[in-house]
Image (cartoon, rainbow, N blue to C red; front, side, top):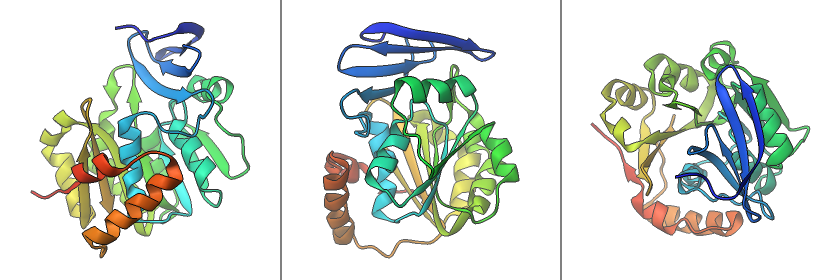
Amino acid sequence: MSLPGKEIFRTFDDLGVVQVFDDGNKRYMAFGSNDEQSCIMNAKPELLLHEYARAMMLVLLFHKPRNVTLLGLGGGSLASCILHHYPSITLNIVELRQIVVDTAYRYFQLPREDRVSVSVMDAGKFLRKAKPGKSDLIFCDLYGPEGLDYQQLDPAFIERCYNHLSDDGWLVLNCWQNHRNEAEGLRSIADWFPEMRVCSVPGGNWTIIAGKQESDLSQKMLEEKAKDVSAKLGFSFTSLFKRMENYGF
């Protein structure tokens, strides 16, 4: 099924096409006409529209980060949300494709701010060179024209994420339901991170939220924090919060 709206922009690099569609209300990024990578509301680009992106923000119930690393940019909806609602956060964006960065700035209202740095490079290469303990929170959303970048669940990649995080840091990965069977990668996350929760999202996404320290928050405390974060971000966490569960082998 093709994306709604009219194609307003198209560009290419060695990895393929990047397209932009607009229906007057929303704008979409695609790596092919049938492949929706990002979506924003033109009048309110900081509002997260995709359920999987909202599920990734569940990590804010457990931690208040100061420095955030975003591996994989897309249209930048997650970045725009963070920058809009958390003015004290410093954001480090790592994106493989320069044309994706350029398109996010030109067509998806990605903010240009001094507290944002952008590295155009492979996420795995970035982590190999990254300073240990630098980031409080890593959002990992590595997708390309062929789907998930499988290094995202590679044990060496998980270890490098762990090393780049601060002592009480958290890692969030956007995966698919079928990755429940990726035993080696999931075991690696569980080995490195004592706190591991997951959330299934309608549409097939599966969010993994992992902390370097176990959370001491009760269910009641988490429910109260969910209400506060929902009010701040402008959407309800209720259904996502109910789907979130502890993960264990």
